[in-house]
Amino acid sequence: MCTYNGERFLSEQLASIQQQDYSNWVLYVSDDGSTDSTLEITKAFQARLGLEKVKLLSGPGCGFASNFMSLTCHQDASADFYAWSDQDDIWAADKLKAALTWLNKMPKDIPALYSSRTTLVDEAGNHTGLTSRFSGAFGFSNALVENVAAGNTMVFNHAARELLQSAGQQDNIVAHDWWAYMLVTGAGGRFFYDTTPHIFYRQHPLNSIGAAIGLKAALVRIHKLFQGRLSRWIDQNIANLDAIDYLLTETNREVLQRFKSARARNLPGRVIGIWRSGIYRQTFMGNVGLLVAAIFKGV
Image (cartoon, rainbow, N blue to C red; front, side, top):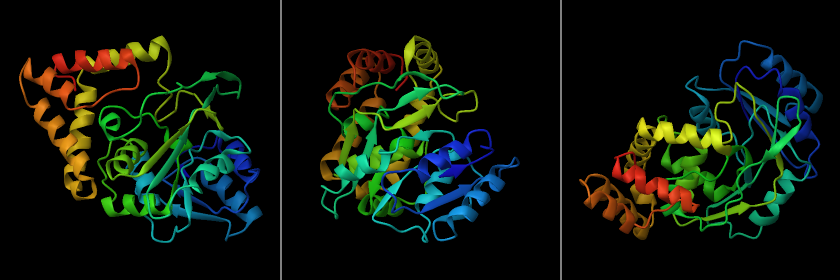
């Protein structure tokens, strides 16, 4: 778990972790310099459960993505499986058990990453909807242009953790969950998207990243697209992938190269090249948006 000034909802999230059906867990909390009562709440939780059950660390102070990657790469945190946790959600009692049911079926030497749909709740914990139910193919060609997996749902095996460590902390990644999706699929690992939600994803004004659903969110994405945000994010992702391309499969290195080459062309070569590169988004409208973005150099 990574925390930063999370006093408002932290106790409820800690309680939901304590009440998991699967109890053989250790919680590592990396605090990124909280100035409210976050540390006091966490230390009280640690006092109740013990120092072996709850461990406190100091984050790098560079934002949520760097905090998660720093914690993931921390040498003292070693286990068979790892789950990322936000400070303000609520885990269903079967959250860990559902993830481990799939992960335990995967070969231990192959990176495997689990994620799921989420139930959205407001500040008071009232249900407000569900995140998108993706049904398309998942893989590196999708991950290059779309992050389908929320980090607060992600659970992964030790092979995936070693892969993330091999890639380094990459302090300038866009988001830790997008990076994990790209890296695991790019290296030939396994990815699973559970359409049954096992987490209550709290939406409030202080979310680092909220759930991108609904008409309003779609309009915001379109606006940001024309401001070049997606293109800048992809630039960052490609720079990070170039630094560790030796970890990718040969096929995915070729996909990355075709995508990079297409992005550098002028119309109509850019549009044709991106189409032929094999990259895609999960929905028809998403792919239409990708085409539009290619036309206007927004991807």
